[in-house]
Image (cartoon, rainbow, N blue to C red):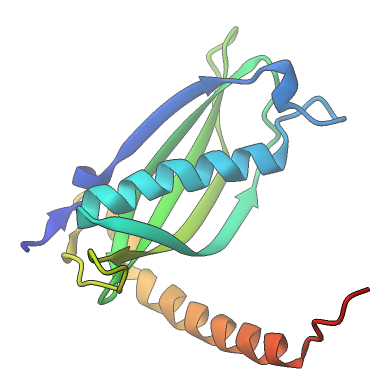
Length: 168
């Protein structure tokens, strides 16, 4: 497989905020946003690898501005970096006030997906070619995030080994 440009995995989805999507603060429910982030990111991972993919981790979700019922929500995702079988996917969430047209970055997220072969085992994925300044910045800084993910995963495994599984 040849290397692929970030734009080849790009997914853009825009939706409205409806009354059943908001919390008691009348802003978009964080869990709803996180579900949508995982959905668009999974499509980016599948487009890049052209294989089944599973979410390995949600590395970060940063809520920067509330999203209100008067806003539309635009999700933009693409693969920024790859390991052997893993891919880092960046998701940018833009809220747009539908009356004024004012746009703001409402949230950002980074997720890791693993590509699977027909036997559900991790499989190799193509290299990533960034083109825009945003893509280049994310690509250049990805190896440090990958290092931190490995450390965090090891600490999670250590904690899991300590935890009890007794019934309450």
